[in-house]
Image 1 (cartoon, rainbow, N blue to C red):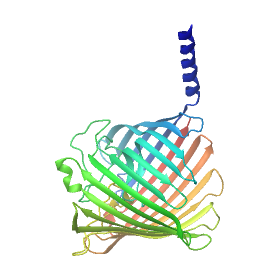
Image 2 (cartoon, rainbow, N blue to C red; image 1 turned 60 degrees about the vertical axis):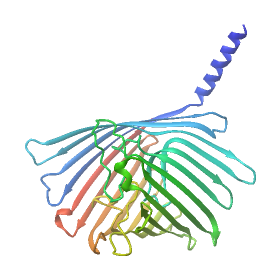
Image 3 (tube, rainbow, N blue to C red; image 1 turned 90 degrees about the vertical axis):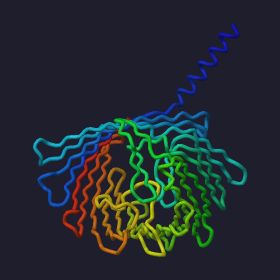
Image 4 (spheres, one colour; image 1 turned 135 degrees about the vertical axis):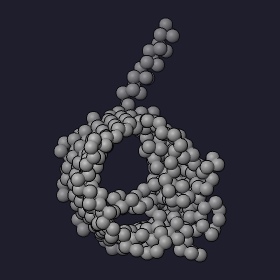
Length: 393
């Protein structure tokens, strides 16, 4: 009888835990048509169909201890017109983008601790050096005067088809194999320490951060890098804010390889949260003899999406406008000018972009993005249009 009661209790506990399980999914399709140079008769079409599933299982009533997971399957179709026969490519991607155990604990004096372990997205203070999925451990201590973070991560189990990383040279790491669904990414160890002091003076926030990247295989030893970032953010007026940051990087502990990434941005909110106007500039060093070497981030990200330049040897200045008149509509317009600073300083081009997002229903959304790059060289001109549809469940 006692065994039966114990079994019933275990089943009841499992049902209670299962009832707290949160799960859902997203189906989205985006279709992009791109024209490069003056090849109007040879446009390139790319269609991606992605199915994403996610779940979250809390282990206490407050939901402060939980496990979360998210994975997706993507089918990609590419067609290049203007050829006989048409050039058609297919691709499949399977990835686990999130699998972590998270916990947060309140302490005395408005202090708290947050822990994450597993696979999750990590970003540095700028969002330009590191901004990708990682496998690792993350710790944060919060207080009214300071926030401290520490992270240790490994990248060798990630999918290189969805996570692109840069070597010290600034070129993207290329895997030696070509598996159809999952390709192991570059094997690096990443360490991160960060201290943030909110409202340190005059409502200004000071952030100090260090990042270290170590290659753990012979082919990657040229990629050992150390980053140090200093950032200031805060208000300048009632609706005007700024962000100023500068990052120094050295390769293999050699100070003659010093490089720099700096950013200054002003954000103006004339209609509170409905409208935002921002303007600023980002500089990633190129070769300046006896001063800087080319800057290389950890995560490969485009500085201007149609130009093909990453954050190395560039100066980018732009104006970005966002307007959300109601809960279902979002409008955005961007203009970015790009300068090539890899060796000399030369104007490269301007990208104009417009974006529209419409939430038709709570679980159905559509988006349209149009952008064009006007380059100094006609062959580098580009135009693209993307239509996106999303259904969540």
